[in-house]
Amino acid sequence: MKTCAFCATEIHKNYCAFCEMDLKDRYILNNGERIKNTIDYIPDQSEMFKNTKELKGVPPTFRKFCTLSTF
Image 1 (cartoon, rainbow, N blue to C red):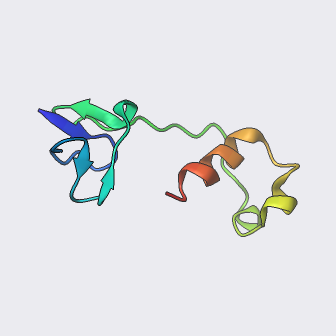
Image 2: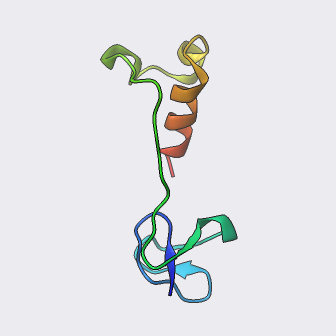
């Protein structure tokens, strides 16, 4: 069974009804699997609300986390 990598819901024609979005092939997994996310850097609470310009000095893993968490 093909499932969404974000919510593990069964999908039909590359569309996840729960997430309400079309999925690229890399986000289609099998039998309820989900994307494995690991964060190597735990941000300081003061960094969580900074804008992009303020984050330029922050390690790339945190910037990647922020980018992934916005969709």
